Image 1 (cartoon, rainbow, N blue to C red):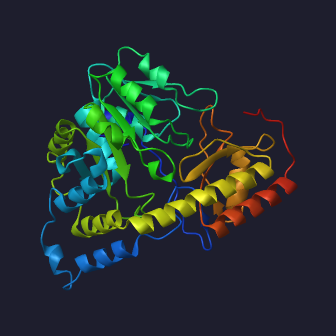
Image 2: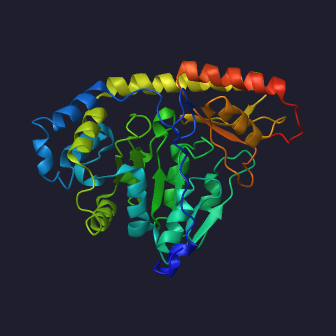
Length: 370
């Protein structure tokens, strides 16, 4: 702590990302990164952006990211999405930060799940936003009726699929929430939507209060590039643009714009890689079940699972000793769970083999079941 800090800084509880250690022969299943490389077309486009000995880097990139916005709009043309309904930024986290400032700071409280992306309360504390958490049900599922029936709602945000549970709700439920609160912004964080859930972009033109946020980090294997986008009514997007241009008018560099555009255009690579992740997810879930784990139904690129006989933190440490990283959250309701990113087939098999060995060595304990 420094005496030069703004007093509010000492009250913040910053988001803690998954660790990125330098360990040889590491199997890294803790940060929900895609186990497969990005589209070769995206890699080629990024190299092309650096051609001419990097001469293009002397100049600022397109501040509006028009080419990328147009490409995203074309992908959702079946839903009637236009370029002016698309916003782009440095990963979905930056877009969410702009969204909290532009849309979610209302006179009445913001509502979001009690078990969800831990950046949400961090943003609320940073920007001085009152919030209310809404409990997931006993099966860790978000119930639309819990939001539909709420009063005194300034805004609502939740991931779909949810994080860290991986559970998703259907579009009619999202539409019901948007209809129930027509004067409140409703933000759907779809970081993991491409692994099995339905995108709420399909609802945007029927609900002017609905904003959908996505990222290139997960299903398009570009976590290191930091690109995200939002789709919503043009008036919502204008609010985000006003905040962005009051903060950083050039959020995406030339390389990021080129790579993200090519990645969005390469539908074949996108389908192949996400289908491989989905298939591995189902095989891993079956393998965990055979070992006695209880796993929530996931539509994301990770599983949220626990074993009734073994402490989750102990399992995490035992796996780390075997150079396998998974994520553990020491929080009420979920401290018995592990969040396991879907890796390659070989990585998933190595994880199961390690867990099989650990369960043979450790003495089972009595923990409650789902």
